[in-house]
Image: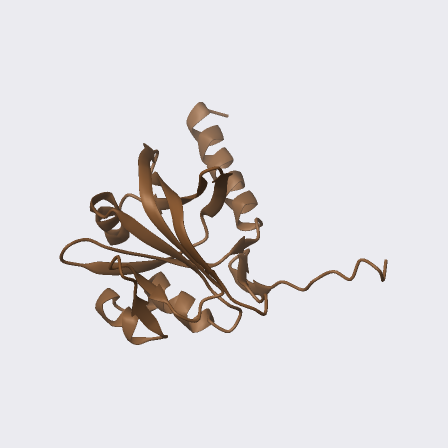
Length: 172
């Protein structure tokens, strides 16, 4: 087996493995002076509590990437289980200029568009942008966080939308 075919095999196995990672579905929103944009993402994770921060990984070939490089702020809108249509729209099923016509979008005092009825909104100030491979890792310091009940996040795993079900620890 050549090194190239081994690398292709590793990439394919790695991709298959990553598809099995359950992840909360978010729509990342940001704007520069002329454009606003949003894109569905699952590559979002916490980074630190001091300062409160998270990371968002964005493909360098996307419009959102270009806007986030210029923008000072962005918002992570974690979707609820009943917002599959929004996830699909912001994944490319709807043209970028029409996406914000769906859902209840508002604009913060800092000019960041956010989904008013998302499970969670985390408003971030961009602290760093680190290019790596095909993506850029954006580090955002949380400035404001909105959390809504009940806890019903939309989850994506193996190309399928899923819902979390709390485990009753007393039943075990």
